[in-house]
Length: 565
Image 1 (tube, rainbow, N blue to C red):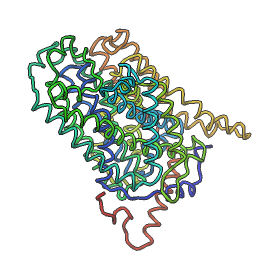
Image 2 (cartoon, rainbow, N blue to C red):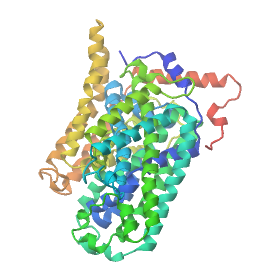
Image 3 (cartoon, one colour):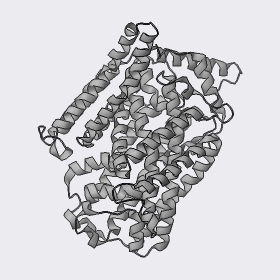
Image 4 (cartoon, helix red, strand yellow):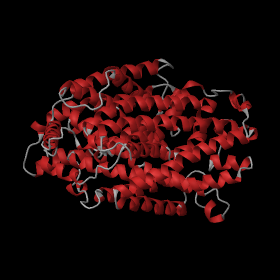
């Protein structure tokens, strides 16, 4: 079957990567991914949905992201391979669950790239020039806006084409700028205008109730933002000491980003002119929110800085995601579900260039279909949550099956953290609201023909019957297929405040989602099996450990390397 690959070939492809990224560079990668276009638009979009209670939504989002990220840090340290997030489901459950998780994760990440380009152009449309205003019609990019965004996509592409070292140095510098400017923006707005009366205006602290706060987590770009914690994991194959640096990079990037986003949200809420709240928080309609507030309170220098940063922040994130998605594509290919060319890594630069080209083409496609930042943020967020659910199941499934494997990161509380992470992921998926949840789940189904080609059609064309080998994969992946169907049904039948038909009363619907999450978590953990991919990667890790042991050092290469960038 396609899931059984040549061990030497995969080892060879990974030997072309340069293990040059330390804790600082990986943290910068994670933080740079989190602080992209989300900080430019997230505060306004969150306030439009939940009012001042958007502050709580950012905290809830950080707790959800950190809990889920803890499960992935153990997996990332166990399997320090490029494109890690698309591999873990394959290791624990075989080809069907692995492919669905990889497909969801790839859709979520690759669509961020055109989203960042769209954000830059949308901010540009507020410039006081006729040609700039023609880039955005208030809802989506115009034809000229798409053209400018396409130029940015090509820029992200070429910044990743040459070398990981160039990417790391450029990204670290950009990330420093991206952190300084949001902090400066929050401080400037607070000192310019801090009207605490905004909490009482337009319906009070939580004008739309708790349901709006929960939906805010899923739909306002909060999940979009925190999803950046994946970037260090997807670059694990280039980490000098993944067991040490990956968990630090993931945790630091989420916590630092939370502080920055809270400061921006508070500054935005109290800087909005009272007159702009006549239609409520949902009536806000800024094209470039923070820059327009700066102009409203005479901070022209801040507006100019923000217009400049509208290129720097999204471009930095776009470059990061162009890098990480190329590693994901290589991971999908090595799982056996893409042509071999996409697994090739350039020996001289350590870059998977064919994968970069594929992702550029897909980014152009997304840009043509989803021309507004808001619409892209919603799709990305729900697809991201679907990809999250495999982490908690995979980490505990692998503990059950392969307790002997080396785990540089192993939390004693993981048996408690993992089911909680599954609950959080399921709740955010439900909060995403019907029909959006149904649409994204349908997008997951669209990818199944590719899986069927490699696992069923191609073996039949070669005169082989795949069914005997395929049945364990189908059995192990059934929980995920059924889970998506059940969650779509619950979303459709659920509370009206979450877009459903209202058959499940308020409060009862959340309890039902929690019960479903736990049921499928335990089903998923019990479904994990020692499939050929897991056996293969165990052999690969053992061979690598033995090879390092022959030099008499007793240490891995990464352990001897310094941890800094």
